[in-house]
Structure formats: structure tokens, C-alpha cells
Length: 526
Image (tube, rainbow, N blue to C red; front, side, top):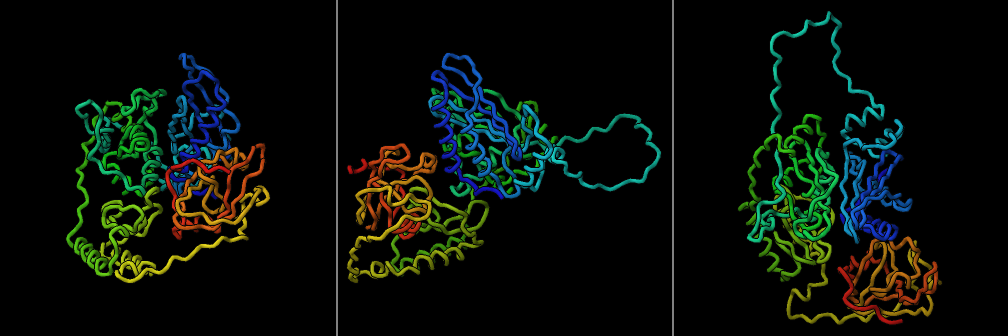
């Protein structure tokens, strides 16, 4: 059974924690670190080499504590029917800049080859709809049965010229940029960005497709040329397109999208890299190395809203105006922060309705409707179903008096939270609107701290530092039990913690909390 899939934010959180560990353990004069991590089944290898600030190389033993980060990342990047990556090249540049290049299909360059049972384990743990031939052979899978021919006398050797097979259809090479501006900086300004909900899948496709050409060095970042080189000098293919490793790098780090024709091709493939034949890989290598010409870019036609869909949107707007729904409550076609948005689904057709959080954007995969009118009915129903804004929409009617929120004395920690005994001077309070809190971990718990509290003042288990960090702001008064952390886990404590009346998830759902990018003030004194 595979672990839950990680989105880009989760992946970066793991790589960030790994970076923190490595930086703490590396020698003082290091400048760059190169890690090759390889794994199949339950067998793994890891090698690390580095460069000092003086240009000399050194061998380095990767700390044992670093291995679980790679394993967790590998498990979380598994895809149903698509397996997971088999090796990764992790590049760390002083002080804390990193990049990672993943290989999903090619056989890793093992130092000590795994045993056959490890390959079988790999397919059992991470099943694939299309198994690379080398992996099937190593795992001992039976070859596909083919038609049998009756035995007969050996055929005479062919005479005359040997027919030449026609070359395969040329592959399409995706340019990294579209040109240069007046200052000589590469541009790709007119390319549409992938929708946020598909960004993780597009990156996974770009980085996970087979590598057909790669250098051991890295290129300069054209938008930050003074930084240590970190752009992968590689090329990938899916059998139809060829693209540089920089395509994923610039999308991830600078939000520069690939050409829209490639993104649409990725959508058409269901965000899953198809099997790539050896002939296709050879053809891609020839294109990437300049030994063969690329096929021309296919034409790109931006999606156009039809007259039928436009009339449905106009009708929806008229109905919303009729019921007094304020424009800040919804968005039509274009995103609107903290509102329900009706928008075209990523791809050639379809419409969807989803909430756009002002900090996190959209999340998940909403249902796609073929016609705008069907999605419009959903948005209209969602907005009119709630009755808490009826008075405001009706206009002129008195607003109900605000209910006074009272402290709740018997709030208890939710499962997996520290006990109340780890906090002194406890008292029931009501957190006013505007209070900023933070938390290490998922939103299923109810323990938060004054935003910006140093980790050592929280007296939490040390491994909680590797959990994802979140900051929240109170939007409506929230009852809580406040206390001061006592010394524990070798930490001094002294930070102010709050056990909230409900889980963070529930408080986000009902609007009493909202997640923000970072704290805007200093934590209050004890």
C-alpha cells in the first residue's frame, strides 16, 4: 500500500528538512554537494560527493538520518499505475539552494546490483501499468506470449539490397524560452500558466519522463546569474516531445511555463508518461544533441468561450444580481480570492466550480461539467443555500446582534497532541479577531502557539520540527485554553500555547481561522 501522494508544497517541505540536516552536517568549507540516491523495492544505495569553496572535490558519507527523507519522498511521489521514481540526483548549493532530478523509468547506475527479489518487491509495492522491459526482465516477469510458427527449414539469406526502414515521425522539441528582451533576458511572457490544481502533475511529468541526455554539471539560472549554477543540463522525452530539464526548473522556481502545446499534450496523456521505446529514446537523443531536426511546433489555439456558454454566464450574473449576491462572494471565469469561482477547467473543454483561498489558491480536483450552464446552476445553488447573508443581501433590514463568545473551561487536547500537564498557568480565554497563531503539523489537531514562538520554547518532540509549518489569523473570536510550555525534551519552554475549542481544520472550515503566508507581528510576552 502506497503512502498518501505529496503535492509540490509537501515535497519541498521534505527537501527543505533534508537540506537543513545536510547543511548542519557538512564540513565548513563546502560549496556544492551532489547526492545520487537509488532505490528499488527495499534495496537502496546512496553516494555523495562535494566541492569546496576552493574548487577541490571530496567524498562524503551521507548521514543515516538523511535516508528516511528520500524514502518518504519516494513513497509520496508514487502514482497509481505509474510506480514511483527509481533514482534522484540531489544538488545542494551553499548555503541552502537545492534542486532534484528524478528518474522513473531508466535503470539506475548501481554500484552493487540488487537481487531479483528486490525488483519483484518494487512492482509489488509500486505497481505499473506499463513496466519497462529491463525491469520486467530483472523481476522475472514472463515475456508476453506471441503467435507460434510451425517449424520449417531455415530460410535462405536475403539477396540484393537490404530495405531501409522509414525513419520514425520526428519528435517535437520544446523551446525553453521564446526570445530575448531589450536587456538580453530570456522571455516567455505570453505563455499561459498551468492551472494551480494541475501544477504538481505537470511538474511530475516533466521531471519523471525518461532522461535521454544529461551532463554531470549544472547550468546558470538566467534570472539569477550570480547564483551557483543549479539548472539541470539534461533532456527528457515521452516519445512525442523532447524538452530540457530546465523546463521543470524554471516552472518550479520562477513560474515560467513550458510552451502551451506541451502542457496540452501532458493533459491529453492524463498527466501520465507513456512507455517510451528504445527507438524513440534514440530519436530524442538525436534531436536533443542537434544531430536530427525537430518537428515544427504544432499550432496553438487558445480556448474561446462559446456564445452558448457566454449566454449562460450572463444569465447567472443576472440571477446573482437579482438575489443581491455581492460580487466579492464569487468569480466568473477569472479567479477571485476567498470566493467561489466558476471557471474553465484545464484543457480543451469543460467547466468547474471551486473555492480559491487567498493564500493557498484552489485545491483538489473539482467535478468538471461539459457545459457552463450546468456549472452555473451549481454556483448559484451554493451561494443561495447559506442563509447567514440573507439580511445583508436583502438590504435595509437590521443585522442580527453579534453573539458574545464565552470562554470554555473544559477544552481538552485532541488525539496525538501533548497533554495539558506540559503547560502551566492554564486559563480559559477567548482569542479576539486578529490574533495570529502558528502550528507544526496537520490541521487535524487543536494545539497552536503565539505566531513566531521559537521552537525551543514550545517543548515539542524534536522530530516535530520536520512537520509542515502553518500560520493562521483569527477571523472571529475563538475559545481556547491558554498555557505556558514547561521545560521538556531538553528545551527551555516558556512559549505561550493555546488548545483551541475545535480542530484547526474545523475552524478553517467555518471561517473562524484563515491561513496566512507569514506572521505580521512579534509573539506576545508571557
